Image (cartoon, rainbow, N blue to C red; front, side):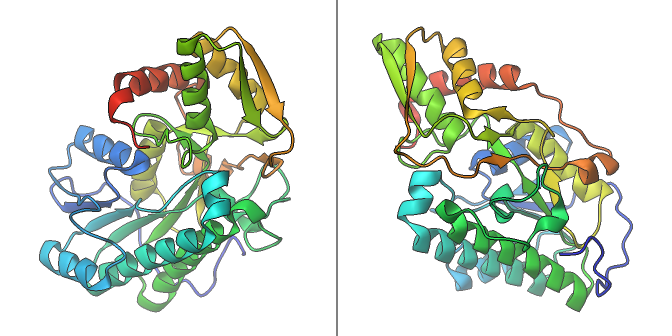
Length: 329
């Protein structure tokens, strides 16, 4: 992918969004969507629209088109997706590919038909090659092999980026894409089978601390490096991009720094009060060796992360404990 797409047909100058215009957040009850909703409320948006998966199945094309016809939003953030960690992605690749493709195509096609002016599509940093040069720049997309443990999910997200670019070329609409790094925070999925690495570690260590367990066993070697961004920072970045950035290339959203899985495990153990030992099951996969995003494009657009990792972890652990009886299993 090149940094400049000469076929792009958009002539648009980003500016402040109309706070009274209708704004649809697809996936508004998920980790990212709920944070975006909170941010928009705090910023004074008065006409927010959201539907739970029980109210609107985004895989149902007819239902999605009927929803857009009825609500006709001016702005959309597409944060809805089927997501999960290494275990879920490895076990159910068909679900991750099929569900996400249908969600994306249905929402984007309906948004096009019913005249959505400004749309932000949220992808994932797993779109980049497994062995991409670090930190990962946006133009490394489609330059190498994907990480096998989540390639199906990655392909779906890559298709979303290309659909955004195609809409820009064919219809001249100022739609954009953002690729967040590993996210965490209030509203995360702490399920033992469906969670990503950080919430899985929070649950594991907190339960071990509560039970007085002598040790905790984690997957892999602990050596892979990961970048973590608090979801409230992500939400702020999304609104900032919608108001300050336009272009066909996806924008990386992260902190620009990373830590090892071992380091993050030790920090979580300290935060939750676990004093036992940590073992590593090296027969389990590590996933990508390192995944650190180059966030220079985001910085050029005028935004940098604000919430420190330990500060964010403490607030996330507090949220997890307060909601322990109502978490997804």
